[in-house]
Amino acid sequence: MKQAKNDLKLRKLGELSFRLRSVENVKGDTGSVLRQQLAMSFVLIVAVRGSVRLIVDQEPVELDRGSIFLGGPGQTFGADERSGEAELYVFYFDVFAFPQPEHSGERSCPRMDRSSEALPYPGKMFVYPYDQLATMSADLYQTWHGEDEMGHFRCQIDLQEMLFYIYRNRRSKPENAGAAVEYAKRYIEEHYAEPITIERLARIAELSPKYFVELYKKKYGKSAIEYVTELRIRRAKRLMAGSPAKLRDIAHMIGYTDEFYFSRKFKQAIGVSPSAYMQSSRRKLAAYSPPVLGYLVPLGILPHAAPLHPKWTEYYYREFSSEIPVQFSAYRYNEDWRANLEQLRQISADLILAAETISAEERSELERIAPVKLLAVSRLGWREQFASLAADLGETWQAGKWLEDYSFQLNRTKELLPLVLRKETVAVIRMMNESLFLHCNRGMAGLLYGDLELIPAYAGESDVYNLPVSLEELKRINPGYILMMVRQDSGTIDAWASLQTDRDWLALPAVERQRVRMLSSDPWLEYSPHAHLRMLEQLVRLFPGESP
Image (cartoon, rainbow, N blue to C red; front, side, top):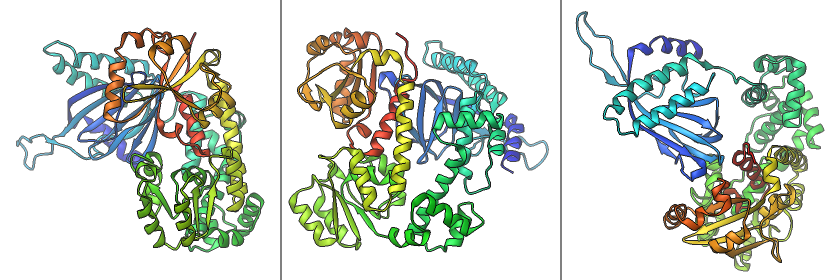
């Protein structure tokens, strides 16, 4: 039905008219940002280099060279995290429709169509061959911002030619085997509750079953069927914890027709029967400290209450605010703690999870409300603390599975990071107002210079430091790569813009060789399992391919 509607819209494109409003060029390596915004017109996003993670109506859309995104009025969209090499062209345009006249001989007037479904195949599309589209995008941008007095008129024609090219060369699937396996993985994630076989997945990826099995295992470290089972078990756990549904109904909802077979699979995976798990999992948890969410999310647990804020816990707010019933303040990470305690008193929590760094007064007040477990985030490594918490919550299986996946992703990141990066020294620089700091926190020390074995440009008495540094000192240290973290306030952003025109900054070898990459404070300032996974994902996007 959906395919038929899109095909009908394709045939009726000739009844539409288009007007280009503006064109933007977003380059990740210059620090430019495609900020979250409400679309007032149609929007076409073309990725010409690198990869980018869009957030569209709170849903992630991965975009890289070979794919485009087409959105409509009323949608919210923006880039979450960009690779350092990512480059996008963003086209904003209006669509006009010519309604059929009521009587023959009458002339109809065009009307602006503001329906996000006015154009066929909205959302992400694959386009092949892609090189011509990238060239068309760059040419249109240059013409739009050029000095030709008829340039904007020419661009109206060019936009229509671009749309024609996109629809003429649209593909339902990626063009290479690796991307085809990713396509099959997304299919699993959307259809895991349906009957799934290797033969079906191989047909979807347009690969032979044998090659598909080998490629999937190599890419993800587990078989496709193992992944189906994991998704089903995770979904079952969420239903058991938050739904009054019977076991038979839960089994059917996740894709098992036989509840007894499901019970055996569940006990084999988790170590306890479904009924025992249901009794233990229906506790009302409260995450008092923001970093606690980074330990619960990998366990597949969302607390009943947690501190959320669109700036201070932006990722968790965006991803999980609709699923956490009680949300208390995370402003400046815990400034409103007295008000938060009052909210906690109202919800009858069974267990409160908090970081050990809270004050003695806070701890005393929390213990009057419910039992409290303190996470030793400042003393234990995140792996040890994660395993300890998982054992306390009866989620050892889930923690083990997650750690297996993390280990696989870590090794894969090592393979994907370019050799030239591993041969050069690396420095993380934080910028606050006009001041620069050589920076390394626990997470960076453990991941960058420990697990990934990158070479630190600065070696001090401690692995953890935050030291003021001048441009002259930075020149002496001479890092091969600079990972730049700019605080997101207006004063610092202005100072960063000014620094990029400073002669001493431009004379740094890493800057001259375009080896500056932007780090976001989230996840790099959080010390948790989930933050470490997100750090790996960001590093792969930051270094999609380098040459000496």
